[in-house]
Amino acid sequence: MLNKETKKAGRPKSAEKRIQVLEAASDLFLEFGFSGCSMEMVAKQSGVSKQTVYSHFSNKEALFLAVIEDKCAEYRLDDRPLEGASYGLIQLLRERGLQIVKILHDDKVISMYRIIIGEVNSNPRVAELFYQAGPKHILDYLVKCFLKFAEQPITEELAYKYAVTFFNLLKSEFHIKSILGLDFALSDSEQIAQVEFAIQQIESLLACKVN
Image (cartoon, rainbow, N blue to C red; front, side, top):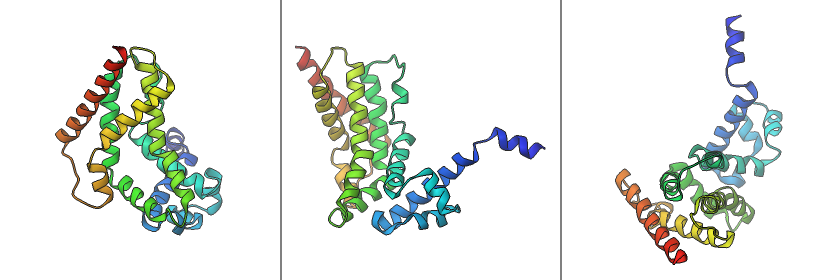
């Protein structure tokens, strides 16, 4: 009886299996690339049936998107923190900017970038999927930040330009170095300094608009 009650109180079995599938898919995509990974391999690696995999993800593209989106959510780069938030734009950019720098430092994210570049010629569709679920997702999130929290109203077009500028400033030199396999790691203090520099540039741009 105790086991049954404990099971009911825990995470639903379906949710647990979804997590198993996502974790297995993440490892397999990194090891074999998008083209070299199959739903059958994911089922075997995750210890569930192929039918269970398809019950959560309609096809391999949907599974790949979910893997990337799950990584973004892990670093809280989703819409939930924006709902009902009362803090200012700079504080938000400081918090989310550091999270973006950390996700770009994530070993799995770096490996995924390398894999996508290697597959561009043979499977250009996977590059589009990765862009939409990863970089574009982050840019869209930043656009919402600027639109919602800027002191002066701005257009969506201008918000997008600010978002792209901020994102590129955060990536700096370390991002391309990481993809090329060069020494790139920033210390915690260097990551914070990188974010602060990016914020200073954005503050200057916002001040120019007001003036």
